[in-house]
Length: 280
Image (cartoon, rainbow, N blue to C red; front, side, top):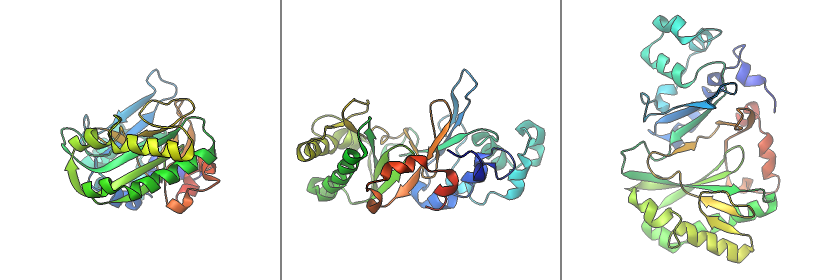
């Protein structure tokens, strides 16, 4: 994984220099959902610092559009307290969420922060635990097929599908045409046997003879359909976020995909760099 390029375009590591180029690309996807950032501290006892709207002042994508080069230059070899007097309140908040000289992932409150009681998207993480690419691709394609032909789902609401490569796996979103009660998650999309999620997993297993399960925990030998980031208060990774290992090392980038991108060679996206991601 290359370390230079856009992340060092200001002369030092500054993820905001990269992220400032993608905020306009993702504004229609994020809408008014609060932004969250995970700043990694590899040499600290604390692995990362999480900034989010439930404990910090809210930061939304609208606040991040049009970041000026002059602001990025002020961050070069400076600490926030040294130049606070030169910054607006919004710039101070952005600095706290995106400190320079650190590797940062960018997430968002998928269905708003608590105490929201509505959701406008269903989140599905397809987690492959050491399964071959061939099986993973077959499962994703069949999951999309099951979603599209599910008459019960169509009676519940109308939606469009969005596919996201996270840097290591695939997220599938059902973006709803209108909000529904948050209670629908537990009734229709959690992990008990009567939900759409469990039904899809069972049908995929029967058709493909590949073990698929609705759940959250990784299970050896099975591909997991995980919807647990759907309820209000849960975070999900944003398109174009860096993907960092548990040790804070850059090992991928998140990007939006088309259904036609789900084909052999998918796992080569694990080698994607921030500079190449900007071309998607």
